[in-house]
Image 1: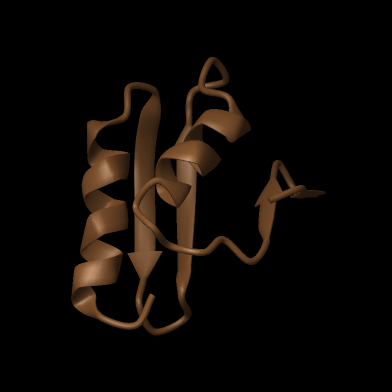
Image 2: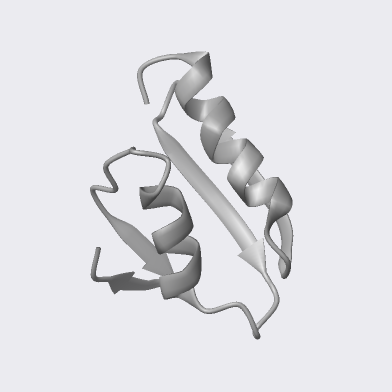
Length: 68
């Protein structure tokens, strides 16, 4: 994420997703922290973020490193 438009794109996607309880997108640290219902799969969140055209460089879910 290089600009507020980039972080805004991710925020808009997360805001629309069923099962997302809360999220924090930080342009400064280039991260997105997502809290979701157990019914929302990690792969679904990852796919939606990737569809914004942003590159996901690393991820964790419940403290475990996940494949991107």
